[in-house]
Image 1 (spheres, rainbow, N blue to C red):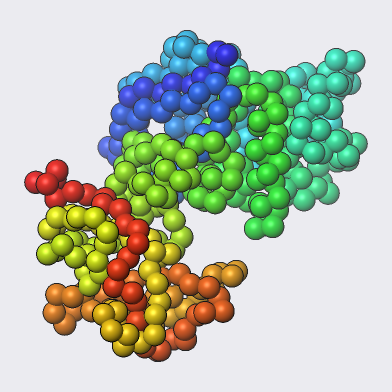
Image 2: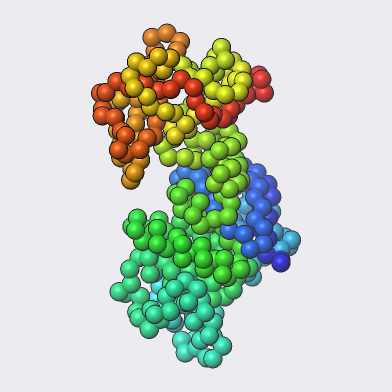
Length: 349
Ligand SMILES: Nc1ncnc2c1ncn2[C@@H]1O[C@H](COP(=O)(O)OP(=O)(O)OP(=O)(O)O)[C@@H](O)[C@H]1O
């Protein structure tokens, strides 16, 4: 295959502000990679550079090993889908999809087949005779995707394609999107700030922050083995709890395995166990708030830090039916089964 994407040392400033700072990213042929990052971290800028719509200050982009620095957007074999992809209102859905391969409104034999294939890839074959005006947001984005895929591009770039949809449409279209991308054989780079979407659509996720890729990996890699504090805080809902280790303990908790003084240690909310209040050896806590998320409850509780009178808040998840109430005294088992060392004091000194 010749449609792998390689981004090497790409930098871009807007005015004095560096947005991308020597960013590297490798996407294998046929792979779907999501670029996940907070708002304003340069994700769209990166996509536009790959598409040839922006020129980087430094670095290069290769598709299939070919340096594209001097290649115009239309010649890069790249298709794009945006958050709001404009459809032409006076054309039918089929004609809109066909617009990707021909400026002529009346399509001939082979073009009709290609439109039908693209429409069926995204599950909108039944819409081809409709006008875009009456389509739902989810339907419109599926049509926009079909219009990008009809050209059988080497690479599809998707810039927040689902973020204008309501939660239900978003969840439905995610699956369609992944199946269509896999079915097309194109390499895909999907920009989003929604981690659930990134994990649902992509084979691997690249976390971007500070103008560089912080870590690339599967959902398990990023959740279980985040490379640093930045990734640990961006991946996982509710957020990971952070502690600085001291005297072999992590705040008032004890983890399996050794930790050195000054290590920054992360404990996921699901790794804590709630026990009865004032259980021998448990950590006393008071519930500040409880939020229900489907079958899970997110409990925010105040604990002593183990270093005096200071208190800190930890997030703990539990089953919806086992949840305590705000204000209640609870205990947290002192021994925590899983943790991750995010910064080693020995390395940073
Ligand atoms: N053409 C431009 N001129 C000046 N500044 C720009 C331009 N395009 C983007 N920026 C700035 O660069 C930064 C990164 O923007 P970009 O849209 O790439 O981020 P993003 O991660 O895609 O954000 P979002 O998720 O909010 O879309 C922002 O601060 C933005 O204001």
